[in-house]
Amino acid sequence: MRALTLAALRARTGSVTFDRINGPTNSQATLRLFGRNITEQDVRVTLYRDNHAWCPYCQKVWMWLEEKQIPYRIKKVTMFCYGEKEMWYKNIVPSGMLPALELDGRIITESDVILQRLEDEFGELLEPLTAPRVVNLRRLERMLFGAWCRWLCYPQQVKAERKAKSAFEDVLGMVEQKLQATQGPFFLEEFSCVDVIFLPYLERMAASLFYYKGYGIRDDVKWPYVSAWFKGLETRETYRGTQSDFHTHVHDLPPQMGSCCSSKIPEDQEQMESNQQLVDRGPWEKIPDVGYSIGQDQASLVAVNRVVKHWETLLKVNPTKEETMDTALRCALTLLLTSEPCEEVSKLPNEAAVGLWYLSDRISVPRDMPIHSAKQLRQALKRTADAISPVRGPAIPVTT
Image 1 (cartoon, rainbow, N blue to C red):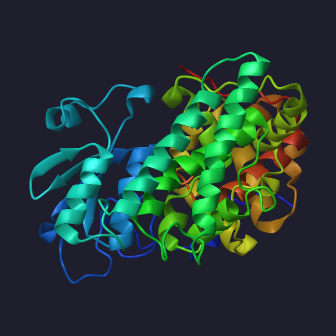
Image 2: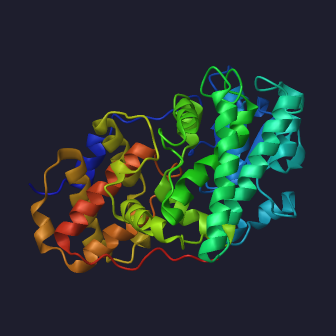
C-alpha cells in the first residue's frame, strides 16, 4: 500500500483526546486541577521541574502532588547537565536547583524539604515523613542509593567490582525483607510517602543495572518482593503517568551521574551485551521495564497522535532531508497503524534509515508518550529502517 498522507494520519488519530488538566497523570500538563471547581487563580502551588521528566527528585515531588491531588501549575526548566539554565528561572532560584516549589508566593528548594513543607500544609501521605519507621526506611533508601552509585559509577577492576556488586545485593536484600514484611506490595500497609521516596531511584537502578551490568532487579525469582512492588506501583495511574522506560533512562543517566560503567565481571558480560542489544535495537516489548499491558491499537494511536502533533519540528531537527524524512516517517506510521509495509520504502535512500533511527533513539518516556506507545513506535521505526538499509547512523552522543 502507499503511505498514508499526513492529513490521513491526523484523521486516523482524531479520536485520541487528552485531558491534561483533570485527567490521568501526564507529563505534558502545565496545570493540574483534578476536577475541582476552581480556576488557575485559586492555585497555590507551582512546581518547577525539568523539561524532559528525567530528574528523579522532580519525579518524587510530582508523584506526591499527584497522589494527594493538590492543584498545581507546572513550569519546566533545563537541567544543568543538558544545557544552560533559563535566566527567568535563575532570577527566581539563583542556584538553579531542581525541583523548586512555590507555595503561596514563597520558593522552596531541596526535594525532601519540599515534601515536608507540603506535608505540613496539606497533610501526610498515609504516614508522616518524620514517623520512626518512615525515617528508618528513608535511611535504607539512601543506603541503597549509595551502594548503587559505588557499583555503577566508578571504573573498577574485577575484584573490586565483585565486592561492589555484593554490597549492593546486601542492601537490596534488606529492601526485599522490608517489603516481604507487609501484607501488600508496598513498604507500609498501603501506598505511602515511603514508596514515593523509593520509586525514582529504584526505577533508575532497574534500568541502569540491566543495561550496564547485565543485572535484573525486576526479577520474580531472585527479587520477588521488589518485583511485586514495581507491579503494585503500576496499578496506580499516578505512577504510570510518571514512569519511564529502560531506553530513556540508560541514555539520560550518564550526564546526570558523571558516568555509568559497563561490567568488568567476565560471567556477567554476555548477559550485559545481550541486554544492551535489546534496549538499543529491540524488540522492545521483551524488555522487563513494565509489568502491565494495554491494547496495542490504543498504544499505536497515541504514538501516532504525538508524532503528527510535532511533525514540522521533528522533520526540521532530523539530520535527514525533510522531504526524505517526511516519506520515511509516514511509511513507518502507516506500518504502525495498518501492519502493512509501504511501497515507497523500496525507493528511499539509505539516509532515510539513519533519520528513522535518529528519531527512535530520541523518543523520551514519559516526556513524549507513555511507555507502551514508545515501544510500538520504536518497533515500527526499526522495521521501516531495516527495510531501507542496514545502516543505523551515529550512536547517541553522551556528554559527561
